[in-house]
Length: 432
Image (cartoon, rainbow, N blue to C red; front, side, top):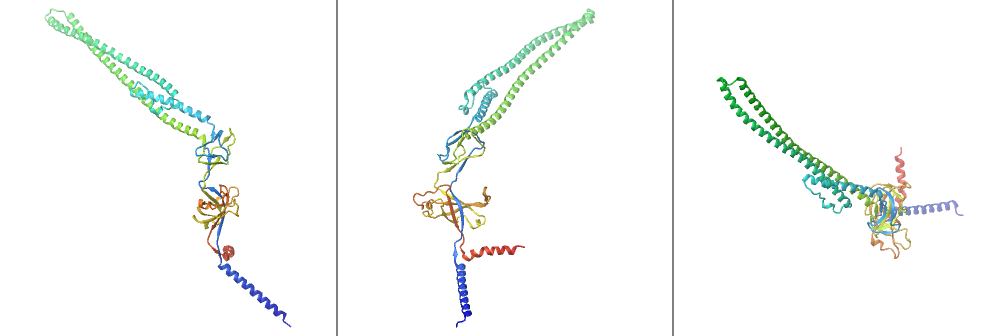
């Protein structure tokens, strides 16, 4: 009779041997067989050039809406018009102030160079409010004539005074000559009278009377000399006043000309800014494409400064894939790295995997505002050659979901199995 215990041992050893053989073969296979590693990234197809947001720096009230979602637009095409009442009124005030300043400058320039005709630069031939400018210029011409007449009247008055003083001097000089002749005659008579007085032929009273008359005539001649000098001083003062008035007038003109030049420069800058604001009230497309996600739907509605009014998705067959990668995997990626792209928005049975390459990796991580999940953005170009491999009738459009497999270094099956365990053990041994 056979030994049951021995039979059991033999079966047990046989089973253990088979198990050991299986484990050994499995371990050998796992340790020698390599499989390709890959980072899987979910993404979205986007235009290579990218969509452009339409915004307005200041905002305003909508006065006209010319497009809606899905409309094809050209670069520079008018999309939305904002109300221009306030900006147009401000520009009109600036233009009016400039017209007055240009007319004033023309008058001051004519006065500074002594010109009797007001002229405007040729650059103002196409001035937007030329009729008003011409009216202001005519008013300044009348003012120039009035000022010139006042200045000429003052000069004429002073010149008349100078003429009168000259005539007065001539009369005084004639009187002075007559007095001097009388003095000379009387002086001779006094000499003769003194001789007669010495001879006892003339009384002393008559001699003294002659001397007193001679002294009076000499005093009168001196007074006439003083009056002539005073008249000449008055003439010099009048001439100085003419020169002073002319210089003061010219200095005032030059100072006013400088001030109005500064005013014009400032107003021109304000005009440029106002015209720019007015032009920007016509919101135009930044590029050719399709209007997308427009929020402008009501005339009279208010748009905020910097608010995205719509997007313009470009017309292009040049596409790219934007995907998100976990921060744990970003160290495995490099620019130029190959990727297999699966367009999950198309039929998986008929759509081949497309080959792409990493074009860029974001320099820092970002966070999803909704979930707070951290990620790195990567961008992969989809070449026209690869897109041409799609079956007839299939088209890739912006916004379509896709999945990218970015191949990394090959690893053995055993390293995949033991890698997490080794990491846990390493972490455990480092803890206090």
